[in-house]
Image 1 (cartoon, rainbow, N blue to C red):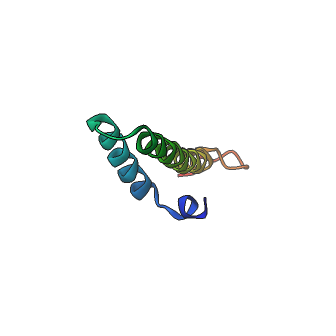
Image 2 (cartoon, rainbow, N blue to C red):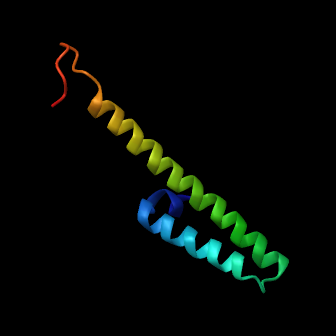
Length: 72
């Protein structure tokens, strides 16, 4: 799991797209398909963590300053 934590959003997204492509192509054994599915789930979780972090940063940046002024 440490490897997933160090993946950038872009790398995780690109690898996830490749996993989906391989699964859609077919021709894999059940074991290979399951392993790819599990990898895809982990990559999707990494992407979701990055997106949640980005949403939180945007929300914080857009929040009014404590003195009531807009952040920009």
